[in-house]
Image (cartoon, rainbow, N blue to C red):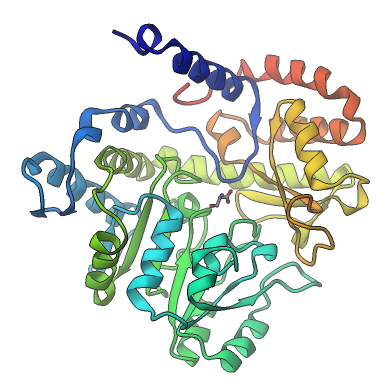
Length: 411
Ligand code: DSN
């Protein structure tokens, strides 16, 4: 029996969501469309299997095939990220938040000092927010961006590191539009003998494709989710130098997780095969071209961007000169068929529930084959809707017609 026959309620809701994803523009910087092959692996019978442990050392019977799948996923991650031989991979974290907590749990004691980016300047909840387990357990000290350039001020980071003597320096952002100088972070970490950890969840696909510099030559531990620019299933990977491998593996299982989701791990393997292709490299290059084109067009329409532009897949629009807050902007754009998310901007005078900015990303629309020309069209729709919210319904109809020419993968 099909899902449609057996559970029409859920089937119909999935169809409704499919329609929404098809007929709207997804500019949420952390979202993407997976291929139908990734979906196939994710929806496979692998979800039936318990495989607590690691390949060749499981606590349940019947894992011969599962071992091969997990080993293949690990091998493909090594190839996709060009990992040196003395690096180790764990593909079991359920998602980015557990992956980060698993690394802290492996390498730190409660109360240890970690330096990370301020959440309001583009950090993440698991980078020491006081409402998150990370902030409640460790002593996070936050650096931010310069109020002049909107970029990380490496001199300030160095001074802070000297002052607070962190055990770990974390470099990784959810709303930072500029290239990260991983070498500089390494130099700072070396000066204070800290572990250097990068969370490349947002830029993972750009790093694997060589479109953004990689932290791997300089860092000790790297985490990434697999569903943003990497365009894979929801999940995460921890990559680390061999000397941290045992502690990290133990922290993932049995420390913080039980049975790994082997259907997701198979889908990660499929993703990594896609990532290693020249088609993916071109895709990653186009993401950045599209981001720059969108930034350029929006600036032409008078929008202010933090750091004055972008080097990666995202841009952060500061709406303070536009007579609209981030919450209302997100809502009216959503009504017009443009999905974005509101975001704090550095030194924001407003609060997270209704901040001054919106964050835009080009990974998903680039997956639909859109290019620079389409970015300028999108910028003019954004401008029209922000200037006069009454045009939202008209724009929604235009976007519905427009998206027909750009079928989304997997839909
Ligand atoms: N929620 C993700 C994002 O939107 O950036 C990060 O976890």
